[in-house]
Length: 125
Image (cartoon, rainbow, N blue to C red; front, side, top):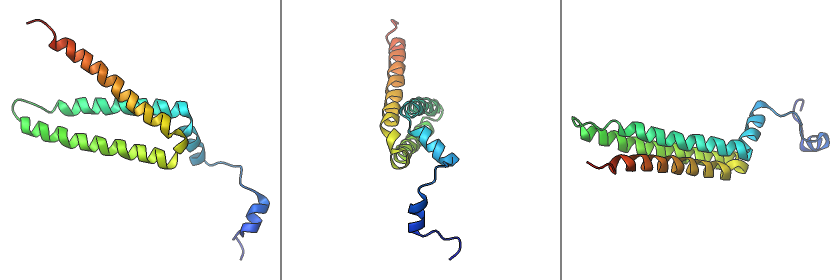
């Protein structure tokens, strides 16, 4: 059959050494430093999205704000789980730094927010 490479011919020629753009991007995303930085950026993005969703609370419509914040929470959790699954499934060598970056970025920014709001609430009145 013309155009079909049998396994013997494939192994005789050896694997191809010309990576595609997809291979190069996957290799870049698998690098621990790149994965950690992307994880931190994603974790900070989660917190910023959380803050934006809680701005929907207003005295005029508290129920609508609560519904919006709850839906936003589940959407963010789904996105985070999906991204972690994709990293684990397709770029497994960079999964651990990415996961640590996501958790670290979120926890560090959340701690900064708590300290900032703690100072606001601790003011004498």
